Amino acid sequence: MPQSPRPQELREELAARVEMFRRRAALAEAAITELRADCDLDAADAASTRAALTEEHGRAEEARRQLARATAALHRLDEGAFGLCVSCGAAIDPERLLAVPHTRWCVACRRDVEGRPAR
Image (tube, rainbow, N blue to C red):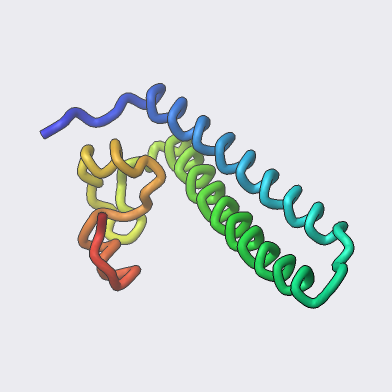
């Protein structure tokens, strides 16, 4: 069984993820602003712009969700609750923490809460 990641390594990893997701959200928001500023010349351009806006909104929303997860994980680390399942309180497998450091649940609870197999 692998060793649990050290708090400083976790903090650095999570801080890097927070910054990455902030950048992704900002880039998507900038793309949305740029797309909205473009003039629609004809129906085909308008349809293309709407599709691009929908795609960028999806990117921005996913980046915000991931940002919230990574930020919450940093808070759990600060509070001493990192690595404990928020549902059952059991320790989360160190392999899972290494793969998904912002995870909130152990594998069993994730299956129950989200209703799908864990990765």
